[in-house]
View 1 (tube, rainbow, N blue to C red):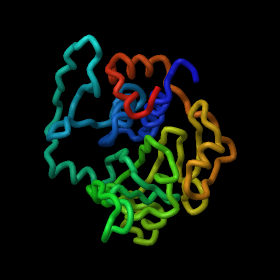
View 2 (cartoon, rainbow, N blue to C red):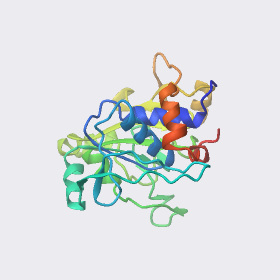
View 3 (cartoon, rainbow, N blue to C red):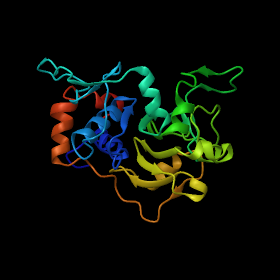
View 4 (tube, helix red, strand yellow):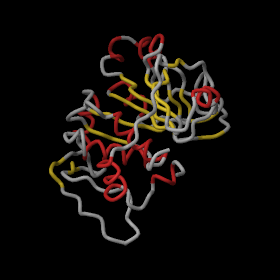
Length: 258
């Protein structure tokens, strides 16, 4: 690997999920996706909308961690009133792009973070449905998976929390109007849904990762693009932003080890 870490490659890959979105509400769950969204807003997607998580939009981009110098983070600069009722208007009109985490995901992008096993007597109770059904039907969704394994990339999810391409098609036009599962970023590689019948396809490998390693860690037959490049690393400007501005405390390394 070059002078950037695997975690920083994952940050850039998550930022690239937002490329071309313009003035959309960016939401991200997980440390690396949050840094990625802020990196996109700070560089190639300056019109992305970010909130304080309560009821305001922000004019500035806040870090996800503090540096070792103990310097206080910048104060949020509020530039708009964004109450809960307005957020739903944005969500239902397709003007949001969320990156969620998946405990299980299948080849068509059906996602589960509700429970493991039969829902009537689960082996493990997880988050539930939360906003996943509405998210996946109403606007663009991508996924972040920090530990790529056969337990996560499964042939069939135990419970459908987020809707994939096959189910959205079966539900009809009203469910496909804003439905888009754009990318899956794992700690090994990046995937889209350009395979047969909009199934998952390997599109890039993180530095130091082989196709065989990804196939071995995937529990379904994975389509592989004709040419699989290396996932890009952050450029010099992006590295400075990640290390000095957005995550000086290196919280990213807690999610993907350096």
